[in-house]
Amino acid sequence: MHQRKVPMRKDIVSGDMFPKKDLIRVVKNKADEVNIDPTGKQNGRGAYVTIDVATAKKAQQEHSLDKAFGVKVDDAFYEELIAYVDHQQARRELFGDQQK
Image (tube, rainbow, N blue to C red; front, side, top):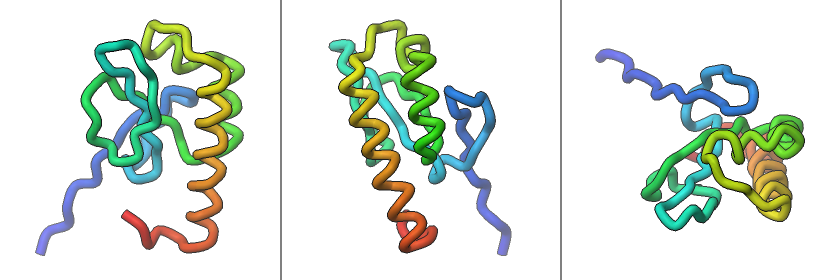
């Protein structure tokens, strides 16, 4: 039995490639609304951030999502992203890589 290819995506903060399951997708839809995409399947332009609080904070400092999407992203969204990343990071530490 052959091993399946692992989909890789680039983290917009560091520029490094990671397996897709180790990243969080942020999506901008046609109405220029920016949202966290936990399913990874929402329509729109996607950008990926590593599941690491320090990386999410760096994204806020550098306004990485503003640059990736070409729109002004509110600081409140960056705070929401940091909280979401913190939650996901805690889940990984508790449960490991058991979730999808």
